[in-house]
Length: 305
Image (cartoon, rainbow, N blue to C red; front, top):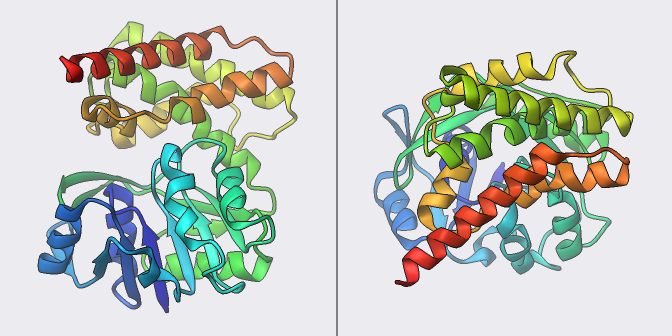
C-alpha cells in the first residue's frame, strides 16, 4: 500500500518506520536536514533502520492510498493545503494529532466530504536525531470517523495492527479524543513551564497538584458536554500516561525551546473554549494557557535581542 506521512517528527518517524516494513512509505517534511538524513540512512527506530522516501514536495504524496497527518496542530492548515483537489476521493486521511480543532482545519482546507478518520494515540517516541527515534512505552491507538466510512476506519486500524501497533476503532471517537486532551492539558503545560520531563508531574508535589486540578477541570467540562470519558478517575488516567512517558520532554516544551508557537490553544485553550460553551469555569486551564503564551513571548523577545 502507498502511504503518505505529513510530518517526520518523533511520531511520524515511529509510525513511518513500522509501516515501511510492508508498505511504500513517503514522508513530507519541510526540514531539509531530516529529508536528507532519511534519504541517506532510512528511518531509524530503536536502532533498526528501514528504507523510506522523504521529500519536501507535497506532489510526491498525491497518489497515496492513506495519508497520515502528524504535524503540530498549529501547522495543520499549512501542511494539508497543498493537497486540495489532488487526492483521490478514496484516499483515507488520518489525523493522530494532539488537541482539538484538527478535524475542522483539515476540512477547511480539503472540504467537508473527505474520507477523514480522527484518532487518539498514546504512542510516544523520543527524537534522537533527524529521522531517528526511540519508542517509549507501549501505547495504543483508537480511530473513529470524521467522514470516513466504517470500512475505511477498519482498514486503517488493520494497517496499523499489521505494522505492530495496538489499534482499534470506536463508533464515537469523542470520548477518546477528550481522554487524550485531558492528559495533554494536565501534563504538557506544567512540565513545559518547569522545563522538565513529564515525570515532574509525579515527582514534584506542587506540579502534581496543578496537573491534577487541570485534569479534573477538563473532565468536568467533558461531563457537562455529556461526553462519556473512557475512565472514571481523570487523575489516575493522567498518572498512568506520565508513568509511561516520564522521561520525555513533551512537544510543548520542545516548542518553547525551539521558539515556535505551541499547541496550547488547541489543548488548554480548547478546554477553556468548551467550558465557556458548557457554562463551566476553567480558571486552571485559562491560567496555564496564559502562562504558556507569556513564555512564548519571552522566548520571542530573547531571540530578537
